[in-house]
Length: 136
Image (tube, rainbow, N blue to C red; front, side):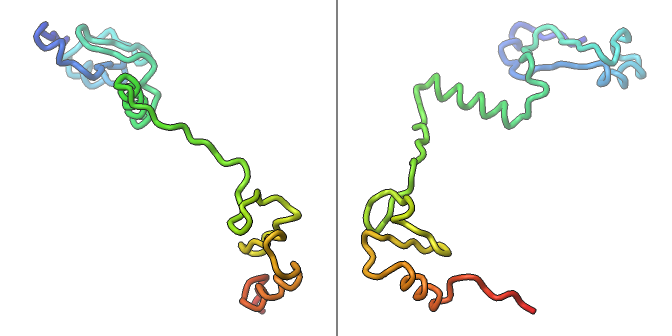
């Protein structure tokens, strides 16, 4: 059994939890306690344990700790606010049909257009946009 002096107790940061599975080698070598079953957990005195963290991934533990430290220091991240509807770059209004139509990543704006949708679409198709023929 490990004994930690009071001087070292403040330096202990990690938990030292040993299960019965971990103790199989110790039991076979007669160097430790032989009364630990595989389903039992032993915590050595003087160690700090964090309950329920054994099944949580290390990266999640670090993220939670970093987030808690930032909250204690008063550093807050701005919450992400999603834009409800995209805005048209041509007219400045929301891109809502039937005034705005998308054709192969190109937007047609009825408010700022100088031609009809069919003419605009035929020009886009001449530039190479549109459905490609299937290779035979």
